[in-house]
Amino acid sequence: MRRHIGRLGLRSRADYWAWCAARGFPASDAKSVYDLEEELQAHEDDQKRAAARSRLHANERKLIEAVCRGELDPESITRTQLRAFCLSVQKSPRDRAARASLCQMLRTFCCRACPSAV
Image 1 (cartoon, rainbow, N blue to C red):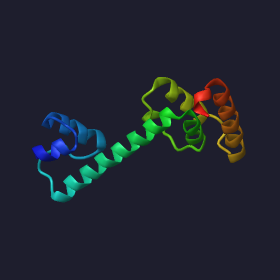
Image 2: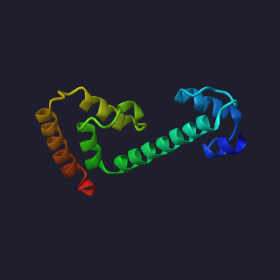
Image 3: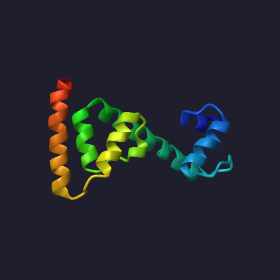
Image 4: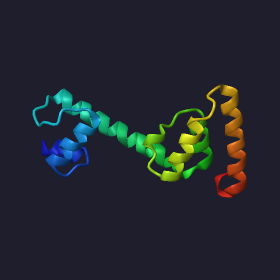
């Protein structure tokens, strides 16, 4: 079990149980090989999502496009200003034409305000 906890990037059983509870897994040590593999897959998925978010946070243009397409859950964004931005876009009309227009306007503003994002 210690090796499994380490593979998840955790340090203690308490951390492991908290990690399990946060992801809907039973917080116990009595698990099958299938259960452990499922947890490792969830950990890998978490890492992939975090890497994708990190790439988006670094590129304003891609962030704007992903938000306008509805691909980001605002609650998954840790930076306060970006989360507020995503929530604002999420509240806008969802029809394709309105979102495309909003996206174009935001990209234009971003390119003028942040020349490094071009």
